[in-house]
Image (cartoon, rainbow, N blue to C red; front, top):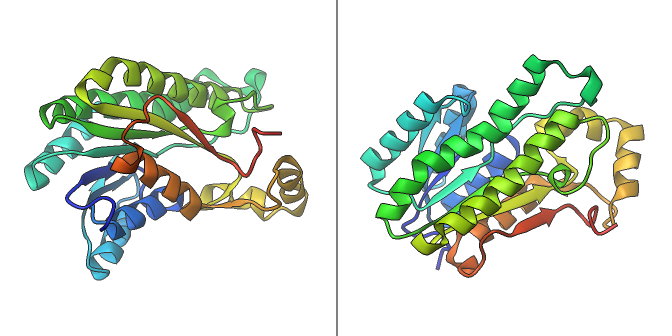
Length: 250
């Protein structure tokens, strides 16, 4: 039996990379997928791909830093499907600049897209999960949210914030049968990381940091997210799951 049969899942940043793989996998596993992305054309293409494969999905153009957009996505989801079982806060941006080289405007942008968006998604989804007697939230952090990351102060702070916000929500809403967990990808090949992975010097540095001698695939992160969203992880909440090829083990 499919692992998400009759579940309704919102996935942000679903137009490409890990979000796209999550949306495709969730649909394959029986979920009705609400795929959102700032890039409307990209996310509509993902929904078309799901529908062509026999799945059910709908797309929203979505600025995750906008509370108004969040309200529209959630209201549209409930209107169409009647409930929300899972939320994957996947959308995010990187920012490779040291603390002293980061402007206040850059800091605020990273925080708004990576951290405030996670807060907004949970704030507006959790009441619907409470009414539905439970749900699962998976927040995508990073290995940078587990260890210090040189030359990426704002990014590291935002992903560390996602990690701890996840734990706070897990503690607060466990009584409502709402599970909240975080996934911490390492060096994963996605469009956002392409310039690094395709740079031979940077690639060799990545490989020197991992225990498994390769970079990860977005589909491997999607499998971890699926596990946490599904009933297979029904006694897990507040956990941080690295999908990093052993970077944090080293």
